[in-house]
Image (spheres, rainbow, N blue to C red):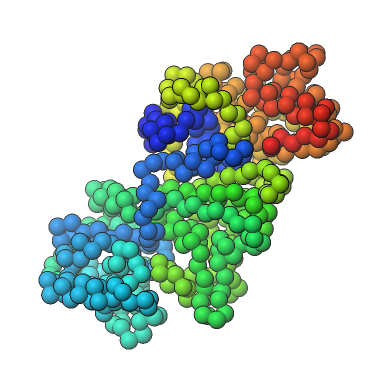
Length: 521
């Protein structure tokens, strides 16, 4: 993303967010693919996630792959899961003969008002020749699909009377997953592979995919989500098929298109207890380790056994028993804290960056306009969401020793009261700050802002309790950050970490009046 356009795009869409908030949201998501946006209703939590990267087209149907032909050419990608890909109707004229093209749409029009699912035309076999021999693709139309034209790599279990073909064997034997093949038309339904992984063709393919793929998934969480079936589906005993919900389709689409980032928004995610439906995802993300240059993780188990199951999905005919959370999937959850929601557990808080939206200034809002000169906490370099690494001990070792001392001091204060954080938090804070060095700047003011954000997003959100529990640690933290002897003399703007001090002061005052305080409000 071009960083200036990134900030301006929110303002152009009619929303005002401070540039520093947009920066920390982008960096937090980049640091770890799970961010929680908390705060009072109506402050724009959902919109900040929905508008992130505005070149995404949320109105498009999710597809597995996009075939694209221009001037009697077709481009395909060798997928990880061999199922099918889609392309638009106008491309069909370059593949079929005029007679077949006319026949296809005659059947499509006849089928339009048919309420039954299924194929509206017989399968046309596309013959592909390469230096290794020949393989076939099956072209057909489906009533419920948009676009209507689909291509299969192999015979469907549902089309038992159709032609026999299976390109999976050929492609697996001679190509790698992700290879992009350029096919040139020889005659009607006959093509020849003319290039493999040619950079100009890959670029063209990516541009087309970017247009057609839906890379945003918006999921309103319901209060009755008591397990992961709303996300990962279940086996329907009556239909004898695996029920594939929207999230699982989206996840599989992301897995098959690793060259693009995909974004999930779980709106009002604490209407149900997050652990009930989200624990599998948290466990998979936390299990990631780097081995021999590759990220490995524990998969989500959908059902017992190793065999694939047929599904009710139009996009994925079969489903594997185990799936991984792809590295190009980023999840944002929005939460409100009120009588209708569940409080976030320490397990969830510890695994996310939590950004609060509680500050509302209508005087500023009335005349607000975006200007990146108002803060120096803005992106100076683009973030590559396809080139991320895991937070590790090395991130912490790279930190400036002065910052290591500050984090150690803070943890020591918390440890005295059994409120300290672990190595995971330390590593992720370090990774965030190291990314600030690269993508924002290196001067002391910027790094102090970064550390200020991390204190309120990663270190302190778990603080919650009664006067007896929190009074002493809050007092010690405030005196440490302000370097004063009296709490009531503290002025947040006079410290290096004004957001942190302001929040801790508010908690300390809440203890005095209510006898209880929570960092997440």
